[in-house]
Length: 364
Image 1 (cartoon, one colour):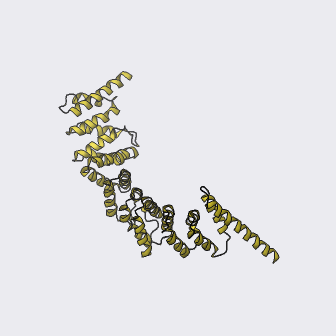
Image 2 (cartoon, one colour):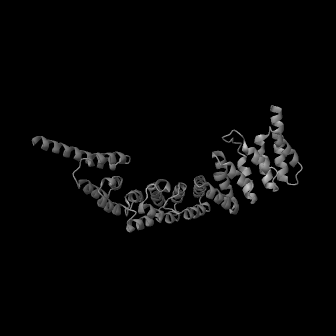
Image 3 (cartoon, helix red, strand yellow):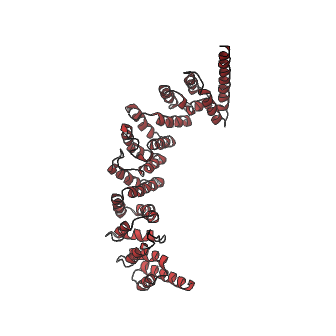
């Protein structure tokens, strides 16, 4: 009995020492991490209710260091106590305290509770861009890849937050959700037409990082569902603004050629009636030839086809790309055939190809 009391007094003394050290560290400019670690050690053996008591005191303290300690340690509190603490800290005068509280709330939020969903929507519309972005990134992280792995009504509720996420003023928030949409898989709580509409909207966003994320998501979607995905890429490319076309060519087409666009899909692009689509393929082929699994270079066949395209812009792009094959007879013939073209762009591309052919011939 005496030994037990001695141990209890020893634990209490250690706990008091840890708390004192944590509070002192929290009040120094660089001591918050040390304070959080000390509180975690103390909380592991603290009596029930004592953790919440101290967190509540710190959350209401006028000293910002202790309020930051409270919000950084709030996960140690029980469910309802944590909710009450976050409600208090979420209205703090300090922006950094509010931001941390918002991110913690996302981790705690029950997506089956209407009041939690309403609060999440309100956080996404916060005028503080950094706060809204942090909330968005945490929401995306809650269902990695936006797939059907988690299942349940919570995923469906989160799917309903996509529109508010994309309506956020925070560039990071919109970027985060579009990155997540790239991981869409069949069976997801997000319907494919909705995903397509959201990616399409992202391509027209005023912020460059958002547009980049939307294009990458579109490329990922095409890789997941090739038939529908690449048809969508072709349709969007054909009707897009010059800025969006260039983005799709860089992110979707050129990237897919480097990463394994199928021969059948490439030929679909090469024979598409829309000249912008054929030119996009020729521009993508400029980056160099890639060999297929059989060791036969089918990029050559694409370029030979595109080098006789009736549209000068397509033909010029193909002739420039054909410099990768300057050692081959067909490339020399293509340069000679187009040297006297009435199109300045084609004639100049033929001249560049002819120069590449001569250079290769001299080198060999």
